[in-house]
Image 1 (cartoon, rainbow, N blue to C red):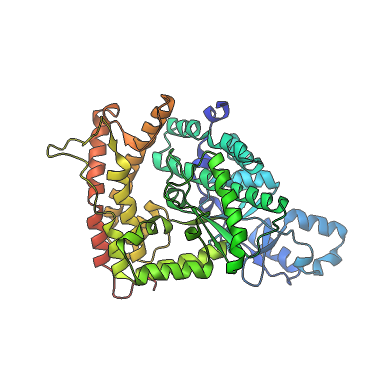
Image 2 (cartoon, rainbow, N blue to C red):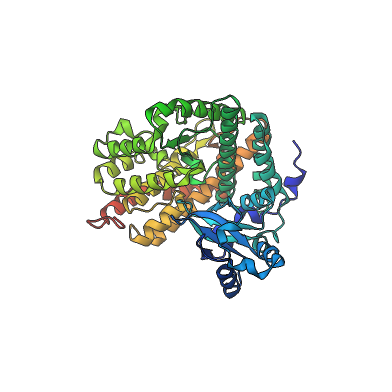
Length: 487
């Protein structure tokens, strides 16, 4: 593998997100507004572009300074024309929580200088420009983005995926935290999934199956949905569509091709079957809403095994508005059911102690499973607390912050859990890198002996904080007002 570009990495694009650099609120106009009106607003705001919105407040087009200059060259009479006549369309956007490297790659691939930032309903909330982004050095970011966007099959996607260990190693050498590095892994996994979806769609068309029979949205669940992936991948994905039962045959073939492509790309099939090829994870929007209502109305411990990672979902391809509808319904439904929340919380309480009576780390064959005894209680606890207080974030740290802000528990408590998760992720990722370098299969087992005395002490303290996560959940549930916040 050629890792020269990785060794020269500038980590800025992997540390920061689009929402940190965007200008907000974005300047917007309606399709019927005149070009003169748009130019006047651009001048007043000192903006170099204006977004054109459709009747539902979503992206319809964009008008930039360059467009205006060309129009003026044609003659001032054109300023009275409607914006819809001259705007560039379609216009591409990017999610607010997308890492900067993805924005850089998308702008380079599309050859654009302006990139709207959108929310879960595909409504613009900000604008990125080359002035705010391309001043950052990001050769590797652009390389990775271009390779993913230009991949034509599973083998090409696998070549990109194979660079992840070297990328994470370079990030860690630049003192990028394990939590930030894991967000990069998750972002690339999302990009790979989206590209696999595009290739699967192209395969369907070339095979004579035609375009999708109804609007659809591809979701990534679990750790990649939370933005917290490690170097041991597997597939967790699902599909929403607005088709009829008869349309499912098309979506079934599409999903099968998608999951096969991801497996070829080095993201193995999920052993638990959490994939869009499984009919249980490929439903119409009405089907998903009914499924959520079933979980809430008849919560059974054995039926909730896959529910936890479901609530981590994010949209990566297709009609994001479908994801937004499902998110709002699922979050509010959970917040209204104390029984459901208690059963979901119970899954995080059956965690073995990480230490023995003398305070030593419990190991098996010299290693300890830090995902099981450390990450799981924190991640699960944050999820339940967020749902109890109708917080819609998917990232664990943001869930803790949002729940604390609403009054679920103290902010100091949330911060201690965030810091503990950071220590645990550092240890797991560094062990995985060492195992990969030593040609040993990477997993979530960490060898405490390689950490050193100080790092081991920090890890013990972090695991002690993680062990208190179930108490945090009980506090969050007990502190809820009679009517959950935001209900």
